Image (tube, rainbow, N blue to C red; front, side, top):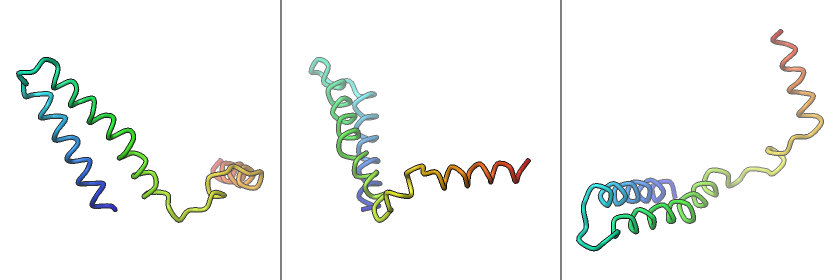
Length: 80
């Protein structure tokens, strides 16, 4: 999954940069290609990246509870 994400982001950047610098004969074709690259990045690459990055983690790790808030307050008081 890691290598697939790397290859996909390199391909998207490559196609986007190519479309930006290469002048197509058809009107606004380069803008369409860049737009499609942005859509693929937003709706395919980013969800895959988020899934890959956070799979296997517990939901409780990301929820701010009273215990975690108290722990953060105590940590801040130790430094002062």
